[in-house]
Amino acid sequence: MTTREDLITVGRQLAKDKLVSGTSGNLSFRDSGRGIIWVTPTAMSLSDLVPSDIVGIDLDTGRVADGERKPSSETPLHLSIYRQFASVGAVVHTHSPYATAFAIANVEIPAVHYAILDLGDRVPVAPYATYGSEQLADHAIKALQVSQGILLQNHGVVAVGETLDSAVRRVQAIEQLAQWGLWAKVLGHMGVLSEDQLAQVREQMKTYKQP
Ligand SMILES: [Zn+2]
Image (cartoon, rainbow, N blue to C red; front, top):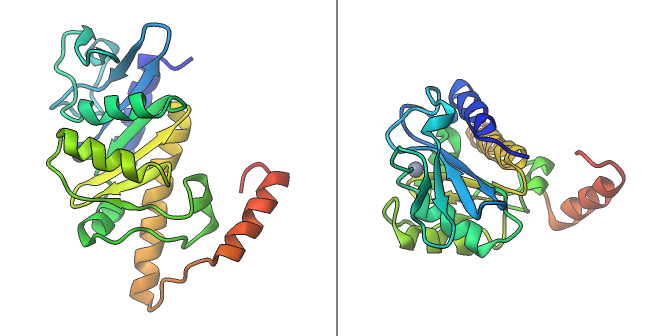
């Protein structure tokens, strides 16, 4: 079972890997037993958190149910995702640099490598809306219909997973794919795998669990 300590460990790792910087980035997991989500607080660096900083939010009412801190400004986004997708157990949001460059250019990340299949066959861009707004949450929900990881236009990255580990693995993959794609373009050509090539990888993955 995921704990607040796990959230802190992951937050530190994201900061160490430079996928988040300053007070940007937020993450949460679902606590089905209590009907709440645990989310990181606003205006604090993910590298400096202790368990009592994590805020419990009632999934139905959206009100603070546990903790003293003010929850992340992106809490409406997190809540909307959990309400919409029953299978989602964790949500991670970053402004990781390469992926956010794609988001600013309003360019989705195509299938530059088969590692993308952990997410979908592309990382789409959800249209711009002000951070923390319900409209941003609505746009994100639509984009998450086609991929487990998305870009928020002129903003950053969101990835979801059944577990915290899978959501984190996906934000890391998105950043890696963006980095590869961008450098390939600098070198002259961002090659994209065809539908057939992706279908063959999917077949292969049935035999070998991990690509
Ligand atoms: Zn953000």
